[in-house]
Structure formats: C-alpha cells, structure tokens
Length: 452
Image (cartoon, rainbow, N blue to C red; front, top):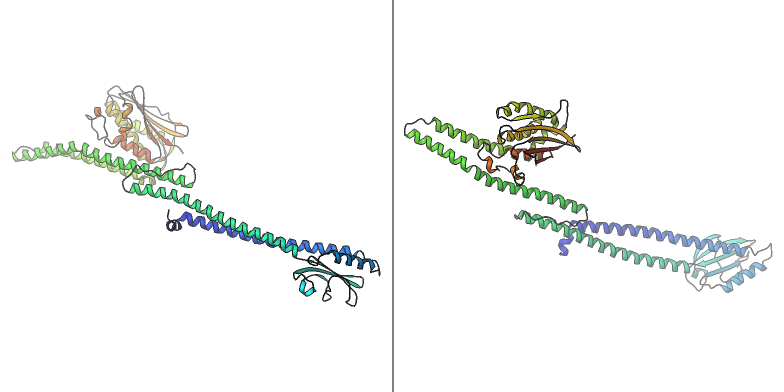
C-alpha cells in the first residue's frame, strides 16, 4: 500500500487522530504528575529544614548560648556547604557560628542563591530563619538532591513520552493498515461484482467485529443480487421458451382468419381463438408484473393485523363448491373461534391460499381430499394446504417456485406456471417461508409466517 493512499484513507486518519489524542492525554497527565512531584519534593525539603531548625533550636537553654553555638558549629563543620548552610546571628547582626553570613533579617522559609549567601556553591538554597532567644538561627539546605531527583523524573518522562509516541504511531499505523486492507477487500469484491463477477464475495476474518458484520451484510446482499440476476436470466429464458408456443398459435389463428376472410368464409371462430390466446399471453404478463411488484416491497405499506385463521376459513368456504364440482372433497380443519393474528395484507394472503387450493384442485384426480388448517407452532403461524393426490417429486419441489416452471405432467393442464412463484413472492414479502413436503401420499404445502 502506497503511503499517499494510506494517508488519504479514513482508518489511517482515525488511527492518527486517536494516537494524537492519546499522546496529548499522556503529556497532560505527565506534566501534572511532574509538577506534583516537584511540589512534593519542595514540601519534603521544607519539612526537613524545619525539623532540623527545631532540633538545633532545642539545644538553647535560657541565656546560655554555649550548647547552641557548639551545635551550630558542629553541624557547620560536618556538613558540606554544597548541601547545608548554618548560621547563628547575634542581636547586632554579628555571626556567632556557622558557615555563612545571612543577608537581611527576614524570618520564615525563603529561597536564596548560594552567590547571594556568599557560599562557594552557586545553586539555590531553601532557608528557614527563626528567633532563638535574642538571636536568629538560619538553616538552609540546597536544592542539589531535589534537582537531581527532578532531573531523573524529567528524563523518565521524556523517554516515556518518546516511547508512547512511537508505540501510538506504530500501533495506529498497524491498525490502519489492517483495517484498510479489509476495506480494500470489500472494494475489490464490489469492483469485481460491478464487472459481472457475481460469484465474488467479501472475505470474512471471523473476528465478529463491525467490519465482519458489514461484510456479511454485503455478502447477503450479493447473494440476493446473484439470485435475482439468475432469476431474471431464467425468467427471460422461460418467457422466451414458454411464450413461443402461444405466440405461434396466435400467429396461426390470425393467418387462418386472414385466409378465411380471403376465401369468403366466416372468420369469427379463428378470431375468437386468437382472442383466447392473446388473453392467455396477457394474463401471463400481468402475473409476471404482479410478482415483480410484490417483490419490490411496495405493498408493505398496506400491512395491517389480520386473522390468518379467518382467511383460511373464507377461502375454504369459497372453494368448497368448486372442489365439489371437480369431484374433490375440501375439508376445513380450522375450529370455530380460532384466531391467529399476523402482520400482513389480507388480499395477498388470500391470493396465496387461493393459488395453493386451485393448484390442488387442478392437478389432483377426482376423489382426492384437500384439507386446510392453521396453527401456531413455536411462535410461528403455519397455514397448511394438504392433499392425498399424486404429489410432487422431491427433486422438483424447489423448482416449481420458479417463474413459468411446470412439471412435464402438468403441461397438458391450463396454467402459466406462475401460481407458486406468486406464492413464494407473497411469503417472502411477509418475512415467512413456503415449504412443500410429502403428505404420504400427496403434497403438503406449509406457509410459515411470524405471529404478532
């Protein structure tokens, strides 16, 4: 991956932003910690010289300066002027004992330079000045040790900052490169799909992170797209194949009408046959258009709460006489008062059940029993149309949902091969499933829909 393209990538910019924020937060925390550390060292230094001043002052007894003078002299002699400074000043400002002569007469804790105090060490001293009788005792300690500890802390902070910056940038770059590679995988797959390679899918790492989730959703969309494209190809082929015969028949009827008209014969019969063929072709295209409209999902705006049990009962009542005329027995197994609420459109669900019942009546021989039922199973509404007729071979059960697909034994009966395609489209629109199973004997069509 080129650096220029990496710099323009969103993952790199996000990683860089978070790295800058992380380093900034570390710097702020480090500076605050460093300042608190300095203050703590200063407080410790103040406590140290205060305790030492109290200790030395305690050797003074009344008007006797001997012990105090001896103590100050001893500390002055033993202590290095680089670390400590002691001075006992008389009432007249004269130096009684010590290793330096303090300037001024201020009391309390102050900070003075070694040069100002007349000491060889030019660094700063922390001084505490207090009265001891009529005299003034001044004790100081240099910042030498404090500065050394501060310098160590500062070096640690600097090196830690450098390490954090390196780790943040390296980690951010690594995360950005990995994320960009995965995004590039998505882009590559989409480019391949746009060039017609519909079998291409986005690679999934298996991390179950957000990119994997998006990749799965894209793959699901590509699966649907591939299915739709393949379906359209199949539909185009089926339309060309299935409509070729009726169009040829229509042409023949029109030619017969022209020939009859030329010979003076009655053309009414030929024209009526042509009209029937045209109506059949028109019905096929209307069914295809209806399926396409349903698959587009526009009918979802009409969804309401409907009672699936009532729809099954209504269809059973309507087709009871139709089945009887065809020599079949239609049995409604829905018990009175049963309610199975679902979210959908009543007209489409009625059409779905009508198609299944008409298929059973059309393709089953006389004496066949067709049963309608509905129940709730594991939170799903299941409407069933079953018969004890010839059934459908297992290998054909999924194919019959394709547009214009017809079994060889069904080609002699009326129909366009779109009834079950419409059933599948309506079921998909309602978020359900259409399953064809063996009824032993016969066929069992189960429509599974989510309940409310």
